[in-house]
Length: 157
Image 1 (cartoon, rainbow, N blue to C red):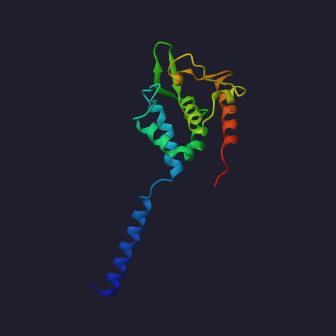
Image 2: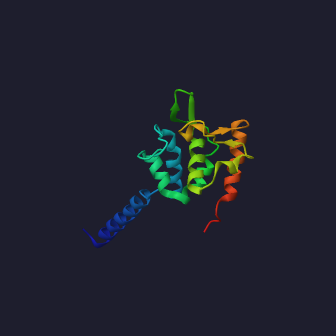
């Protein structure tokens, strides 16, 4: 094989290696976080003391801590149902409810800070995730809570 052909072949291999490497890059972390938060709809069990621990989406989102707050806030208004269902009281928890609950927990905020925004988390049931209520039409209250939470975010670094 001639020298020119070898150089052309090596250049082609190098170019294809670069293309293969670039096409296999990990998605941006914000995309991974959004996917993990969206997958909270698959939560199927919630214990009053251990919450959703042991379920991949819960453990992943909780592991990110503050980094996931903007994504969680973005989903507070999401009324997609989760698999969390209380048969006795006929309550299905939404993705937005889970996000709001996790934000309260991670940010160390009492739910009473959101009374004026239309959120309620009374302790009627031992499992608080099933107690989240929205005073006005749900989306109106959820949007106000979202705006309130956004104002509480620390400035980006």
